[in-house]
Image (tube, rainbow, N blue to C red; front, side, top):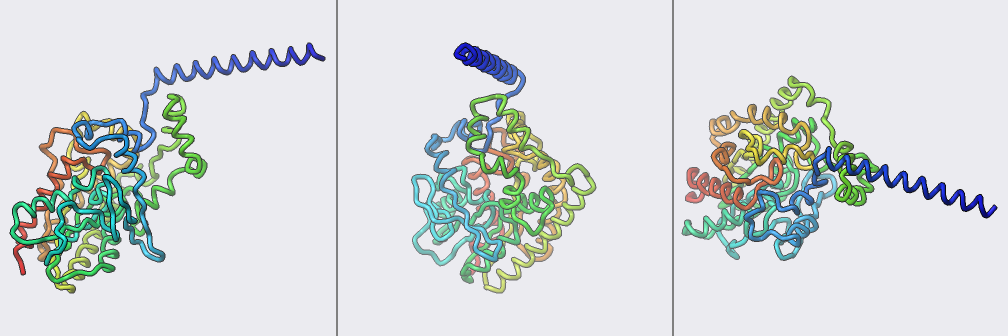
Amino acid sequence: MKQMVLAGARLLGVWLIVLAVLALGVEAVARVAFPYVPPGVWDYRGSRPPAYRSASFFSQDFIEESRSHQNWINPPNTRIIYPGDYSGRWFNVKNGARLTVGSPASADRRILLIGSSTIYNAEVPDEFTIASQLQKLINRYRGEQVQVVNLGASGVNVAQQLERLKTLSIGPQDIVLFYDGTGDAMQGVFYANFDGWIVGENRKQLNNVIARHRPAIEGLARHSRFFNWLYAKSTNYLPEHLKHPDQIRSLAVDSREKLLRGLLETDAYVRSQGATFMHVLQPDLFTRPLRDFELSLVQNHFLTMDGIEPALRIAHAEFASLTGVLKSQGIDAFDATALFDDVTEPIYLDFAHTNDVGNRLIAKFLFDALGKSRSLSEN
């Protein structure tokens, strides 16, 4: 009996060695055959990608606070999204608004800067958000006291922005500035769900098993090239409607019309409050040709999901006439989609979110647009 037990133990040992050798062999082949794909947004940003190379604020502590501070609130029976309060080193939120550095304690006029995560700017510290850099320009070049209020919220479209706006107090001296376009294109064209919201759609896409065990799976994907490849493959998908160009184009047309109706409704509401409305159509990675150093952003579906590029490029073509139509209706409207055409340095951290340099250029565009519209000189 003892000899049988020893023989069984030896056989088990041999099989374990064989399996270990096979596993090491598979891993060795995977490391040769497959490039490493950062298995998430935070892994990519934590690697200090090109858009962070010159960032004075970059550190792993900053990346961790950027990730962990976000707490998005969705009040019951609404589609409103806003950030929960937070007090930290790089991120501060109070009463649903992110801190605007340099904002005067009191002012007769406010600029309510409303948009999606591309206005909230979780990619940078408070002082480098679009809102803070716009405030800096106003403080430097304007003689009046004006507060810029950062009302960015993750994944919202224009309908949600208007719904939230209606819960806010608006004064007759205020300027409501919507900065958007990409969120509506994503919701309407990529997700083909005009009534949903982007964060909710993202949550639906991942398999429940993967969602429940994501931390452990991502840990394996960081250390094993084979699991890295398997995780990337198993979480990549192309929505069925994006396989058909005619459907993409039809959805883009519908998205443009829904966006236009939402903006016209917003203007009417803002006017009814005695305030001023202004719209800016935003740029993203696909409003111009890709640079070579941006290819890694579209090759990693954790940063740019498969199908986003055609969805956005076709949507942008349809949205091109939007600014002119709004102007013909007497609305102050500006098109910023060509803003980064001549920018040669890395500014994008994924298909939509920009670094401090990109935010500074956007803030300058908004400041100039406010001057052209004479909004800051009225009243």
